[in-house]
Every structure is written in structure tokens, then in C-alpha cells.
Amino acid sequence: MTKLKLYRISLIIIISIVFTSCKLGRFVVYNFADIKDYKKFPSRTLTSNEAKFKFNSTSKGKYPDTLKLGNKSVAFDKVLEDNKTVAFLIIKNDTIQYEKYFKGYNQESIIPSFSMAKSVTSILIGCAIDEGLIKSIDEPIINYIPELKKNGFEKVTIKHLLQMTSALKFSESYINPFGEAASFYYGRNLKHEISKLKLKGTPGEKTEYVSGNTQLLGLVLERALKGKTITEYFQEKLWTPLEMEYDGSWSIDKKKNGTEKTFCCINARARDFAKIGRLYLNKGNWNGKQIVSKKWVEESTKVDSTEGSVDEYQYQWWLPSNDGDFMAEGILGQFIYVNPSKNIVIVRMGKNYGKINWSDLFSLLSKYPKK
Image (cartoon, rainbow, N blue to C red; front, side, top):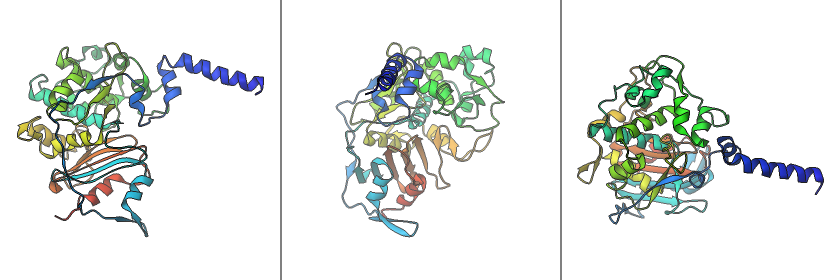
């Protein structure tokens, strides 16, 4: 080994050691997003109780063995595996009709939600409104985050955050280490990053999907909870009532007095993510108990193009078609897809999106089995 090569290696090691203690270091060492990211950040634990809800299962699900892609018929399992899938579940009538894991993953493998957490944050906002902890989605967010008044946020409402119509100046690029998305994901002080946010236009005029909206929702929720962490509230309102099979966690920005990354980063198993879908499939009702109001579920998943909103996005849920279906979606192709008219929930978790339109595939699969 030459002296020059040894010097370069030593320099890289030194830079890595120095940088791992800061946001830029995390960006350099960890980038880009990976489904093992839950191991990289501190988190708060979600604990499963003795009562565990388990879906029924059958080996007789009438799903196609092959799919026609272009001019070729390809085995269904191969389509999933070739497109970087690690977990795929199809649940119809409360019965698992199809469940497969790939690339070394299994039923007990932890997978991060990425932006599917946005939909969970929306559910928790709904729970807080049901309980009167938050008065209305029409409240200005400065009622909860008064420090943003100096940045001109007086006209931004909770609804603007839910609909991504706040006119927030925010770079969603994870490639730029100095942009807001990277700062929120890799940084160790979310509240400080929030205090620097600004607007670039008038709220309520245009939809722009940026994660800063959901992190602001998280801070609204945290302030409304008055001392209870968001993870504790998630445990109380969803994790325990939905009788999750496994422990989970929510990643935070730092170990001591950390803030939940509400725009991403819930870490769980595929079956437990499916229970989020089942809750909304049943209009917020879980085995006879109303967990979140039916009104909130319906408002969260209806088509609305008023006040700058777009048809395909509502209250942190994606609406992929006009069939009444909706889904939570995260980077790398994490999905909880729900089609109430077909009584079906599909969960897809992956290492990457692959080269397939997943919402089209979900729509196709929702037509099976015929009975």
C-alpha cells in the first residue's frame, strides 16, 4: 500500500469519526435512506401487550400465479422479488390471503415506515381533536407554536399542514446535505430546525408535498399533549388498542429529550402496519370500539380539491384512484393500501420501489379473490 493511499484512507476514517457526531456526518456516513435506518437513530419504544390481534389466514387465496407485464406473463412472486420487495401481504375479509417475505426478511423483521408515518400522525391529530386536546383543524398553528409568529406563520392553519398547502419553504431533496429534508432526517435538534422555517407564498393556494408540514403537525400535537410524548400517545391511542403483535418504536432526533420524527420513522413489522389499514378500513372502529371518529376517517380519505388541495392527497393519505381507495406511502416503496369497497388491505414493504406502478398493481389485486 502506497503512502498516498494510506493517507487517504486515514483521512476518510478521521473525517468519518469527526462527522458522525453531527448532521453532516450522519449524511456522509449513512446516506442514502435504507430500510435498516431504524438501527441508526435513537428511538422510543412501543410495547405490545398480552392481548394480540391476529388475522385469520388461508392458503386458498385466489390470486393470480402470473401477471401479464407488457407482452410477457411473469410469476407473481418473481414480480415482487425482482422489484425489491421484502414483505407483501394481501388481507381480505380479515383473512391473510397472501403473505410472502423476500431477501432474507420474515414475519418478525422490523422495517421502517418512512413517510407512512405521516398518515399515522394524521390519525393521532384526529384522536387529539376527538378528545378536545386540539379544538379544530382551522386553528392557526401559532396557537401551539407561537415562536413561528415572528416568521410570518399567523395565517397557517392545521388544515394547511394536513393538506400540504401551507406554502412552506422547504427542500424535500435528501441529496442536498444542507437542505431542510436532510436537516430534519439526520439532524439532532428538530425544534431548532423548525424555528428557522419560513413561508414562500400564501397558505391555501397550492399543494406542495414537503415533510416539514408533517413535522410541524407533530409539534402541534406534542404541545397539545402537554408533557406526554407522541410515542406515549401512539401507544395509548393505537398500539395497545390495536393489539399489535410485536414491539415497535418511533425514531427521535436525539437520546435526551428527543423529538419524534413525525414525518417518517415508525419501525414495525408488516403485520402490525396492516392493522393501521384495518382500522381505517373499518372507519376508525376496532372490534366494536371507536378508536378515532368515523367523521375524521371519512374527512381524511375523501376527494377534496378546494383551497389549493389536489384530488390525490387528503390529510396525509394518498388517493390513487376514484374507487374510494387510499394508502399510506413511504420512500423506497412502503405502502399500506386500503380499498373499503373490496374489504381489502395490502401491505408492501421494500428495499426500493423497483420498476412497477404499485398503486396500479394494488388496484388489480383488489379484484381478487372473486369471492
